[in-house]
Length: 414
Ligand code: GAL
Image (cartoon, rainbow, N blue to C red; front, side, top):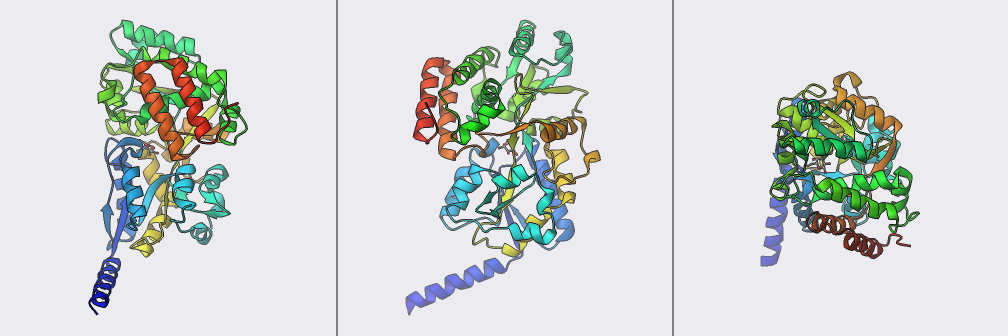
């Protein structure tokens, strides 16, 4: 009898909670250019659904450093948010879809008639067994260098570098003039792999880089060892306090005129804009040398977890972020391009226009550290190895370690 009472009370509490007109959105967009975009989406949601109370369950830490662990605990504990930020690709599929924690949502896109309004390449990596499991709200480009135009002028940079030799030449010049050449903030370890994966892309080329994830190319490739050599050279130009800095702190060094450049995903563009800079005026950009023909893809998506407490509101949220209106409100602020192919291009600044053109014409390559290319276990192990490399700078040992990690995760090593 007592047991029955407890069950009744729990059911009642669940009923009351679920009956509340709320929407809990989980992400890691908490500030420094990221929150602004999220809040703009919340405002738009309120325009249509003023009575729904939004719970912003964001957990701070770039690239989901802390958020991903919190989310996993919640999901495994049967306490999902109504919808959450998750990268298109393995982070979504391997962590949450094959483990049966998500609802298929192809029907939402079908009902809206927009299934063909997203790039196939992106929707494909949000899908499993023919069903879509999350809706892409944007596409970020990860292989970009943002630079301070005033410093570039001072060091005599007349055109953007396209080779390592040219790039290193300007990094040296900047260092000679007393600036940090390449700003790095690896307090949260992901940023060192963020840099390395694009150097790897430069050295392997997009075809081989993409073949790695399909088991059609081996990690035991001199190009990967060469990528470590190049990274070692670039590390000569980073700030001494890199281990105490976040990615925003590093981008800020460029803004404050202390560093020549920062290699980052284009959320840094969003951040520089929220700091008051105009793209093309105070800052310029170029693809990391050697990656001009490639677009390192990072796509933020939202899905519908099974057992979402406010499922109806979650569906409203998903429909909203799938719309052109929401994508055109969010992305110009966030520093990303819309996932919707029919977005209004006139709303995007010169940097984002450049990115949109490249997305349409260059080889698309999935990011490792931002969850698309490989399972989390691989990305985390590689991140640790590269982070250690930033201190040891031991090319041979790190290359060996990369081979062990690849082998452990079932990738080709011979
Ligand atoms: C990425 C994410 C971006 C941005 C960045 C830095 O993983 O896709 O939207 O938030 O991390 O936090």
